[in-house]
Image (cartoon, rainbow, N blue to C red; front, side):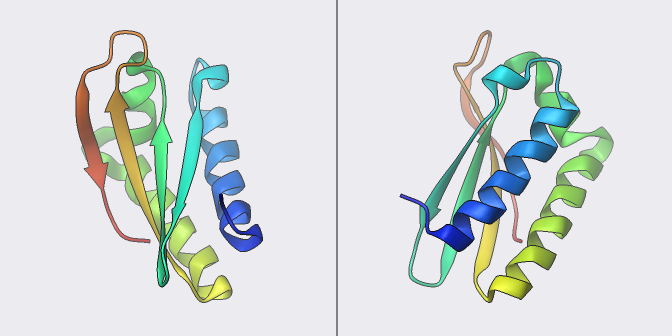
Length: 100
């Protein structure tokens, strides 16, 4: 269960991702809290993966930059993982990971 602070960053990622995709109802962000960091797992419809990753990963990198800025304020590291997994037409692999 996300903490209030982790939930704020999770909600931020959720809102940004929903604004980028064609199927916002299929966007989910799960926060996995650890003692020093929180992993945010972003899942979108298969056909929307390109929209959240962007050309050469630019959109994903920008998302991670925003998360990094929010993390500094909260004094807890957040990592964004964009997961590709079985949503309509999806495969079962991790698409991208990074630090926030």
